[in-house]
Length: 246
Picture: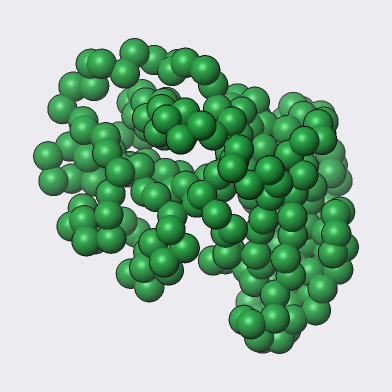
């Protein structure tokens, strides 16, 4: 192993922890040896509190406007997501908190107030108590705005909307191999609820979870695992990147 590759490996271990680094290597090998036909995915499922007040003043936002988009909003046509995915999300009664400058999409956060059907793997998520949480997913900031404070302001707007609905928590699933996402959620006060593995080969999906149903085999969309998260039990916080473990 060259010095560069060894340093890259040490950096990966520093960011993810050695267990998730081994999982990442395994997922990479599975994809490589199967010529990309088999995927191994690992998620952390976390909850984070809706803060009582914004982290930044909600008044002065310059030329950026924030609002809840509807399915016909033209600015969503700029989103780097397939139109079928966006339609499916609105079909689940999800809300899209949008940031836009004039007619330019600056960013968005999606919130789902009911059960959420995952659109990257085959899985349905539920939670109890149902009226105290919403599922947050797909946080996106357009490249021209990534060095600004838009990320914080967008979350503040989303939290303001959630507070108005009496929501105390948001729930998310995090790619275990995405150190940036794990760090961002940790800064939001994330606590780990569970973890899940998905092995996908064509139509076959094998799922393993640290909570019921623990395991599931599926070959079609109608047959998918249903995972329910209990928000009343306090879980440990996500580990810091330099000591992360699975």
